[in-house]
Structures are given as structure tokens and as C-alpha cells.
Amino acid sequence: MKSNGIKIPLFSLPKQQNADVEYSIDKFVSQIDFNFLNLTYQPFTGVPSTASSISTTASPISLGNFINSGFNLFFNLGVVDLFEDYRISGGIKLSPTLVDNEYVVSFRNYKKRLDKEILFHRQTIDDDEENSIIRHRLNGLYYILTWPFNPVLCIKGTASYRYERSIYLGTDITNLQTPDLTANWGGLKGELIFDNTRERGINIYYGTRFKIFGEYYNQIDKTNQNMIVLGCDFRHYQKIHRTFIWATRFAASTSQGNNKLIYYMGGVDNWFLPTPKFNTDISIAQNQNYAYQTLATPMRGFTQNIRNGNNFAVINTELRFPLFKYFAAKPLRSDFLNSFQVIAFNDIGTAWNGPSPYSDANALYTQTIQQTPFKITITNQKEPIVDGFGFGLRSRLLGYFVKADMAWGLEDGIFTSAIFYLSLGLDF
Image 1 (spheres, one colour):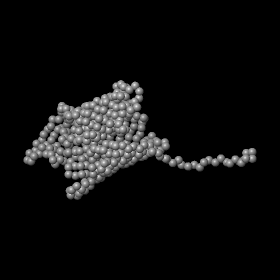
Image 2 (image 1 turned 45 degrees about the vertical axis):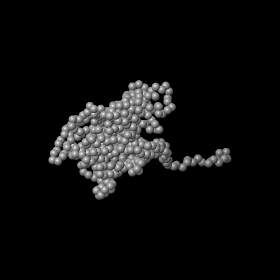
Image 3 (image 1 turned 90 degrees about the vertical axis):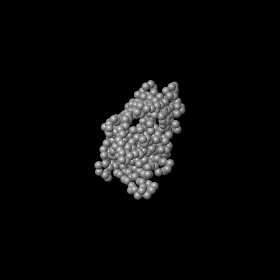
């Protein structure tokens, strides 16, 4: 083409190329931690006691033990694409022994309304029993779908596969000859989640949130091995004045099926000082065919296993008063003072077997003492519901929200000695 004798080149479109998805680092986290990365159920660790002659009517007493995480180092790296449609993250928890490590990798797809996630989790747990050390290696693969109805309500579904291997370490010839135990579990979980809370400060909320869930698990490599878990968790945060609030929680759950889940009630989550203690004086029924175990917390004023069973219910209530922030006339520069809180709390709850806490099927009530040739059955008169109360302090220190609680318990009308808890984490 020419214009006034000047040759003008023809316009040509640029070459079309596919836009590649490029990722950038979204966050990198390194911190100390006292919890597990993925709070899945632990394999049941209860074993018949050879040191005690006391047993439940069904079978010998079980001295269980919940395996707490202890001190560990946590590292997490997350990357995200430009439009934040895809997220990839990976985390590792390293224990001081480098044995009880934990790994998690996930890929999330947020491109459409239906959120999708694939997650792989691997965990190793050492269980020290009376005459054996059992190393549990747990591998789980999860496919998670989330459908939001609106900004505050959604449903969530999870399909899972879990491979477990329990290895008896060669501490003696008997354990050396014991074969490894393996299990393959498939599971489905559905959740209805509501959350309209507004955050007015760290651990200070207005509003309500709840979760109602159901789970079904089936052991693939065995027949008639299944577990059903149903539960709920309701929380309400009521404004009293400004940032002074009253927080209340009700949680309950039950496990049914040929295999069951045992709930150990007592203590707090992420408890690291003093070292968490487990109450071995409370018997555990052996006729429930427990497959897994977990904690029912918080129940302050007691150690772990003040009550146990395949059912639990608990009510927690707290008055949260951000002392310095409440009286300050302007924003505080100190993060420690800005997040400092004084709280008063009360916990009341129980865990049980049978249709109700007062049912004769509850293992709490009946014990058998066997001394050949005599067999004596004792019916205990115990109040299944326990109560804990006290006060605490909260604040964020070096990036960690630290909770310090002093609690007293009330069991069978008798007040227990005070127990001090130091833990990490938000909310209850």
C-alpha cells in the first residue's frame, strides 16, 4: 500500500499464543507447633491391662493413651496463580526425633463455583504400649468438593482413602516375630457449614457459626467392618459492650457401626505445658470394638480421659474481655497489648456408652474384680457429667496466640485441685 508515494506496510495481527498459568509464592510459614497437621482420627491404642485385676463386665479394663503431638517444627509453602484460580501448598512437620514426622500436599481449584481440592497426607506415630512399641504409618488421600450457596452457607463433601500399617518394632523376640498389621479404609463425609461471624479483633467475633456433619467409613479388605460418625458444633458470639463478648459453644457426636470411635474427654487442644496427662483410672469398655480415638475438648479442670465413650456432649462458655483495647482511646501500637484478653470460663460435659450417660451400659458404672476363685461385680455410683471452671489470659506473642488457663474441676460433688494449661490456638 502506498500513500503519497510512501510505502506503508500492511497491518498484521500478532501471532496467537496460549496463555500459560504462572505461579508465584503466596506465603511461606515456619513456626514451632504442638499439634498435628491433619486432625484425623488416631488408631485406637487401648490394650488390656496385665497390671490390674479390675475389669469391665465385658472384658478386662483397657489402659488407653491418646498420642499427643509434642514439640515440632512446621514449614509450609503455598503458591497461587495470577487470578487466584489455583493454589498449591505443601507442609511438613518435623519432630525432634525425626521419626514422628508428618507431610501434607494439596491442590485447590477455585476457578468455578464448585471448589475442588485433592489432598495427600502422610503421618507416622509411635505408640509406646506396655510391652511393645508400635509404629503407625498412616497415608490418606482426600478429594474434597465445596459448593457455596451464598457467602455464609455451603455444603462440603469428602471422599477419602486411608492406608494404615502398624509395625511392631523389634524390642524383643516376640515383637520381632509379630507380623505387621495393615488396613485399607474408604470413607465419605458430608458437612453443612454456616458462618456469618464478623471479626472485631483477634479471637473476638460477633455472630454465629455451626457445622453439622456425617461420616461413613468401610474397611475395604475386610467384611462387616464399618464406622458411622454423626456430630455437630454450634458457636455463638454475643456482643456485651464494644469488644467485650460472651462466647458459647455446644458440640456433640456419636459413633456407631461394627467399629466405633472413642472420645476421650478432658484437657484442651494444642496443650503443651505442663506435659499433657492421661487418666488411666477411668476404665474403657472393650465390648465396643473401637477402631479409632480422638479428644473431646475443651474440658478444663481435668486431665485427658476424665470420661470416655463412643458418645460425647459438651457446653463451653467464655467471657472474653480485651483489657487494654477496651479502654484505649486510640489504636494500640503494641500487638501484645492490643490482643491481650482476660477471660472467665465454664465447661460442662460428658462422654458415655449406651443410649444415655445414665444408662447401665455405660462402662463408668460397672467393674469386675477377679481373684481366683472369686469374682465380684461392683456397681459404682458416679455422676457422669463433670464441670470445669476458672479464668485465663490470652495474647499474641511472637506471632503465636498463647492461652494460659487456671481451672478447677467438679466431679461427684467434689472440687479437684487446680490445673494449669498453656496452649496455642484460637477460639475455644
